[in-house]
Amino acid sequence: MVTNEEIKLNNHAIASKRLLLRPITINDTDAIHAYAADKSITMMMYFPKETRGETEAFVAYAVSEWGKENPNDREYVIVYEGKIVGGINLERREDKDTCEMGWIVHKDYRKKGIASEAAKLLLDYAFHTLSVRRVISHCDSANMVSEKVMKKVGMTLIDRSGTRVYPKTGAVSGELLYEIKKEENG
Image (cartoon, rainbow, N blue to C red; front, top):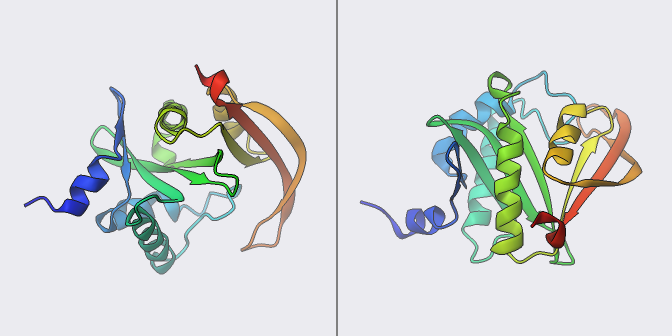
């Protein structure tokens, strides 16, 4: 039996021929932990989720956001060939005309264009469904892979002077800020 909650979440799913982006559910915890706990992730603010408890808390937060009528933080899993291979999110900023987007892909599925394709899908959703004016993304200045995704989806570098402090290590690094506006998205 399909619940009303499952129907609501399915209405937020976004698909292309290759990918499905769908809201995170509690049942996704194991698959999310498989990529979120990757200790080789060194240039992302809130990853890795080193313990199962950290992943469970993240999933619980994401599910609670989807339970709201109008979530501020929309966390999706990326499904490729029937398997959860990563995540992508869209978070409304305070001005409500801007969203911030971020992504992570399991190391076994990188270099397949998955992050770029998922980002394009979410940009279209942000501009045409949520009617935001602008989407931004940040990355560590040394994270050339994420920067390449931002460029590939049409984002423009607007600030290279930022810094970030990693909560778990206290390490400080440069930060890049990219944006794309609705009229640039087509």
